[in-house]
Length: 290
Ligand code: GLN
Image (cartoon, rainbow, N blue to C red; front, side, top):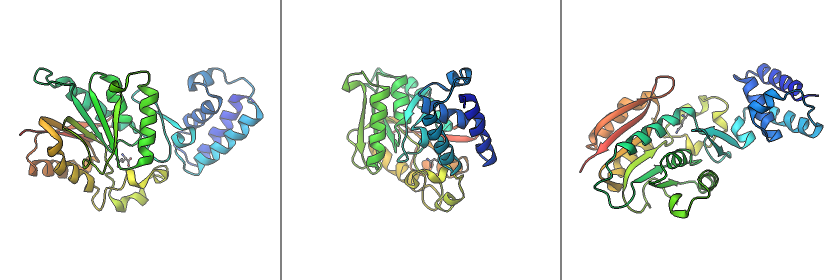
């Protein structure tokens, strides 16, 4: 069987199982098995596919049909143009979260350097795979980036991503990782705190797509109204913020009005909402002056 024939077969199986992007998924899975680029695979699809590869391909297609995310099957996912290592211990980075990275970069570029003694300090809370922290540090290397998570397993994935994607740089140029329940055990103060915390209302978790149900509940479940962690971050962040500093949070578009009220109650100012790729309010930012 050729690569192209295997691809058509896998695509047909995924389509029959109701997978939304069958050809894309089948080609990502096959390219990963062959250790080649997806575009290279599509151009060179007449080559014979060795039988051992075919067996693995069939197995991976079956896992996809069972609802496993492509990123968990292949062990990686592209985010911000970077190839992140992914395991089932972390949420798969979403394209929408690139808005959080974009907003963070814009804030950092706006911050004046004049009054500071050391490099600008950025914190990524609930870092998961490290996608946001690594993308920001990759874009702007001369800042200090810290990242934290409560999950030891997630931190191992994030550290691996920092090593692979920021690798070759001296220690001081990389990211400092902390195991912490939100801001509790973090040293120092920050100029910018960003977070994509768990924000799905607990009762909605079982109604999510089958892919999402394979992701760690710890990374999704935000309590009854989904705002448990966001409330805590808003309340606890000022203690860890330089004066002035910014906070940027990803959340569900429907939660934005409630979050704006909570920010106001805690004396944050300059509340601003950023839209995602489908035009939905996805990131909310605010300043905390002294
Ligand atoms: N955006 C995620 C979803 O698709 C939720 C991520 C989160 O809770 N941080 O459900």
